[in-house]
Image (cartoon, rainbow, N blue to C red; front, side, top):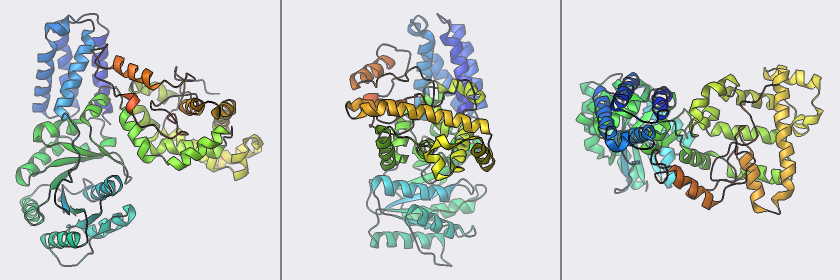
Amino acid sequence: MFESLSDKLSGIFDGLTRRGSLTLDDVNGSMREVRRALLEADVALEVVRTFVDQVRDRAVGQGVLKSITPGQMVIKIVNDVLIDTLGQDADTISLEATKPVAIMMVGLQGAGKTTTTAKVARRLKDRYKSKVLMASLDVKRPAAQEQLAVLGKQVGVDTLPIVAGQTPVQIARRAEESARLGGYDVVMFDTAGRTHIDEPLMLEMSEIKAAARPHEILLVADALTGQDAVNLAKSFDERVGITGIVLTRMDGDGRGGAALSMRAVTGKPIKLVGTGEKMEALEDFHPQRVANRILGMGDIVSLVERAAETIDAAEAMKIAEKMKKGRFDLDDLSNQLGQMEKLGGLGGIMGMLPGMGKMKDQLAAAGMNDGMIKRQRAIISSMTTHERRNPDVLKNSRKKRIAAGSGTKVEEINRLLKQHRQMADMMKMMGGAGGKKGGALGKMASMFGMGGNPLAGMPEPTPEQLEEMGRKLGAGQNPGLPSMPDFGKLPKLPPGLPGMGGSRLPGLGGGFNPFGKKK
């Protein structure tokens, strides 16, 4: 997400921060580069002009040019303007209305409207415990209503029974009445789309709006369409009146032009973003966190939230108990790798850790990617139950069979076994101390992660130390950086997670070493 724009801006600001002082020419030259980077990211021209003018006006002040860290001050100004452009605060779906609350989903065909409707319904059911009814008003596209019914069963949400021959307005009225009589909290309308905006589509949307009286009208737009998504939002807002935007396929958008432009052009907030094909791949849009990610500062808070939502706490506690007893077999390692995949894979995790964006080339050269995790899990899956529980029995003949079955090489099996042996040894060393001292298991679990971090093996920081760290990294002692999250207030995760168990601050411990030599 935003990789291309983030790389370009990081390169520009690296040049600024290396200088002891800045001149007006330095600022103007940097702003030209920022303007070019934003235009290449497909940000709307009017938004680029406003953005650059605001940054320049704030950056040319004598207080910035003569400050101790002028380069970092410029980065802070860019961060502030980014947040202003994206919207100051997160704006979630509003349910503050008479039940059943009506939510109308609009957009063009192919943007992922039906799938997003099911994702939002699942989110409302799981997060807010709402009883949701979904209704498909798409009578044009073949099997559109059946598709929503299938997705409804998948996410455990009721759908309106299909009655052939009804118009979209009639379906909307029947859905509203069914939701009211059935005691539903929310009724969602999945409307029809077209390959492009036309008058019949807008008339149909207006009629449905008049009949359903929706509390929220959410535009579903494909982030990969760039400027077309911005023009789409303007058209729907002028004709129908939208209350918010859901951007799909944000995980594949390396430029970020649509996200940066739509809020500024329409004045309507981006409420949710789709980050994958799975039903749980939907996230709230937090402007400040997104701005931090664009500038390569990571997003630890979202990573912790994602972990809390996706990790199986019972399974994590089960693994933690085995760790405490000094037992750790290849099944446990496979489960840990699976937990990493649930968190978005190695790329997803690294993209949310501060400073890791600049290490992409080193990670790629070391073979550290999501494919590595899949290969390692394939190796373990090709073993018998006895082999997974007793890795010492794996001799050359068995390794050759496993390599053939998993489509890998014996060298990769050896690296995996060495990695497991190191981790198992660590479990044995620290298992005995777990019952005597409460922090030992948490420290061990926080070390259980992805590589050669200088913090590996250090004691877990106390809440007071975390608070002091946040204060120093924030606007207190270093005015050149945006405020960091209060790590001491983050939710404490269950132990046994990949690199994050028993700790509020995600660790990068002594598991994989992306920069170690391959043997």
